[in-house]
Amino acid sequence: MKLLFVGDIVGRPGRDLVRVGLAPLVACHAIDLVIVNGENAAGGNGITREIGDSLFAQGVDVITSGNHIWDKREVLDYIKVEARLLRPANYPDAPGRGSYVARTPSGRSVAVLNLMGRVHLANIDDPFLTARREIDALRQRTSIIFVDFHAEATSEKIAMGWFLDGSVTAVVGTHTHVQTADARVLPGGTAYLTDVGMTGPHDGVIGVEKEPVIQRFLTGLPTRFETASGDLRLHAVVIDADETSGKARRVETLSLSLADLQHLADQWPDDEKAAAGRG
Image (cartoon, rainbow, N blue to C red):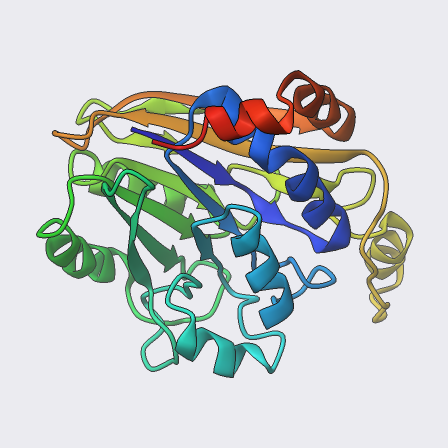
């Protein structure tokens, strides 16, 4: 069983990377299920129905999120009817759901759980206790459980990895938009990565134009942030897991430029992508 998780998609540049690269990545790595974090997909803040539907149409199976999930007002209605769009499960009273059991094209089940940290973020319900409750229920349905832990503090993410080691297939962090170099399989068989990184423009400050950010640091005055546009790069992680035990066998990070993805697409023409479709 192979899972592909694409890090925080930022604005149109991030969506363009997914449009170009997703199908060849799925074919090249023989991916069974695709998960993306889409909370920044709409202009860098939030997600819309149109964007969500487009991502699903391109082959995404589940969309996770975090603190920006509510930035577009229309998501309040969309998330009520689209079970594949998740918000953090530890929101105490919010529309939508925090977990979803997806099926691969061959009919195998994969659970995706979305959690959010509390250090330097909203003081919502305890993500550790929420994780334990959710995982106990999900384990009745499948042995493969993927966790997107959307959190600011490295310490909170690492603690969650150790807390869930052996009880889930993977714990992968999102939110900080910088891919970390600590991918590994923990002793209990859980793949761990502190942050998968960002899919979008890397010539700014975590996805936005750098000058307004610098001015805010210099002056303390509010400035208008716009999505940056250059040095496009897709950050993702591929997890190879044993379907029976739910343990991870291998975890690999990806950092691919738009040119890399276009080259990969050339190596996998449409007919070959279809032939190598998910099983």
